[in-house]
Every structure is written in C-alpha cells, then in structure tokens.
Image 1 (cartoon, rainbow, N blue to C red):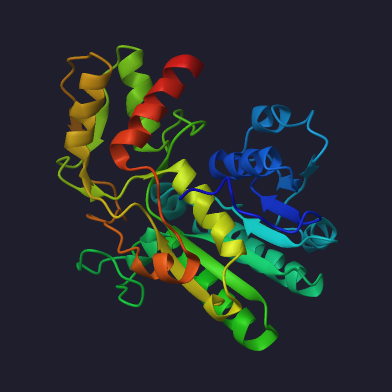
Image 2 (cartoon, rainbow, N blue to C red):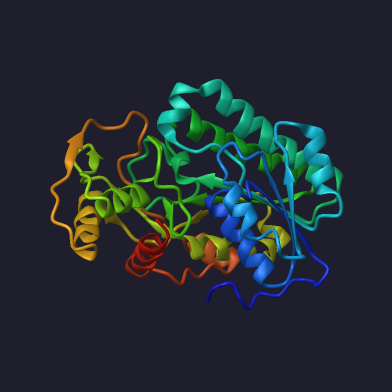
Length: 324
C-alpha cells in the first residue's frame, strides 16, 4: 500500500506542472523525499511561493517560474524529463462559469502544450489531472469510467477535452498518457481562503476562527472525499503502469460517499464547536452526488488507497490546527 516503497530508475527526472499548488507541492515533496530529481513548473497564479520555498534548499528540486500557456516554456521544461505529472490547471466550477475563455486557454491549450512538449522531448509517461466533474449529469452511482453524462460547466468540459486529446496522443503518437479523475481531494496545504476555496479547509478555518460557515444547497449532496496521499500514490503508480493502460482515464477516489452536512457536524465535533451552519443556494454547475468505482485503477494502475475519509480528515484537522 501507499507509494513510499515504489522504485524508479535512479536517474529519473520528474516534471510537476502546477508544482506550487496544493496537489503539485505534495507530489514534489514526496518525490524529493524519495531522492528523485524534481522540476516544478508554476506561474504562481494560483500556486504559492511558500510551497516553493519549503523545498528550495533541496539539491534535487528545481523551480521554473513559467506558464503552460507558453509553448516554448513547456518545451524547455520538458528537456531531459522522464515523467511529466501535469497538475497545472485552474480549478473551481463556479469560477469557470464566470471565465470560460480563460479556462479554455489555460486548461485545454495549456495541457495540450504540455502534451506536445512531452511528445517532442521523448517523455516516457504523461500523467495528468482530470476530474470527477466529467461525469456531469449522469445519475448512476458509483461513477464508472465509460458512463458519463452531459458536462455541467466549462471546467468539466476542459477536463473531458484533455482526456480526448490524451487518447489521441496515445493512438497517433504513442505517448503513454494517464488521466486521473480526482474525486474531491483534501489534505495538508489546501488553501482555505477565497470565495472559491474547497469546502473542507474552508469549514475548518472558519470553525477554528469562530465563524459560521455557509453550506450551498441542503447539505445532502454527497462526495467521495479523497485524502492527498492517495492522490500522490495514484500519480506515482501511473508512472509505473503498463503501456497498455496508456490513453485511459481512471477514477481516483477512496470509493466512499460522505454527505456534506454529516461532514460539517463531524468537523464541529472534532473541533469542539457547536455552530449551526447557514444554508445558501445551490451552486450552478455542481454535480449533486459523486462516489467513485475505483476497480479500473486498482486493476490497471495497482492503485490501493491507504487513507479512508476518517483517517484523512483527522490528519487534515491536525495540520490546520498547527499551520493556520
């Protein structure tokens, strides 16, 4: 289980785009801890300089400030790289509804730039962040690859488009691409601030500060919340996966289903707070329920998530108590 005992060639070089962000910085940290050479490419538009600084004294870590929308930057960053882990993207369904053109430029063209740069530089594996949002309005639970509905937001459309390009790059050019459909990732270093912040860190920070969180909708929507270390495992195991699994997309969750209102009261109990939440309108473009069937990732990637929601949320709470 986990990823810490995985072995790569000792001269492997990993490029993590979006490596100053929440998921990317955790991947960079894990790989440098394991002793591998890591390049972080980030324009710091949503990533944090602090996430770069915490690794900057490690001799096997290099930071490149650059934008994946610039093809020359992508080409330069991919020189001599063995594995690309493409985490660079703008998240948030509501923000994508407000900024569709920017999401197309960043999430579609930017990812295509990286894919093409990886191809031209002979990169061995291209692993990229997709999203459970690609399932759109299809009601079936658990969510299973190959059974998708109509997407509900520009963000979801960018991720579905990435998957189609990745499939083509495998078929046309032989580039081994692996799409990871993340299901509501949470954990250490996830940003709790701003109107587009993810719900778990936002609730934790507000409760710690004695504020009253707002739940959008009735709180009965469900999510497959996935601890960050499970996601690190998926990324690294995809780098070791069979070429026959290339061109595919995989659900990366725990396989659980948590209701938002239950999570809220669990957080209140863990933080010893008795605060009734406010309720706001449903968010446009949100999927009502998500729960991952992870059997395909288990079979083809060897994905075996170690951290269930309860374990992960306790680790996250401990981190925020210390670091907020």
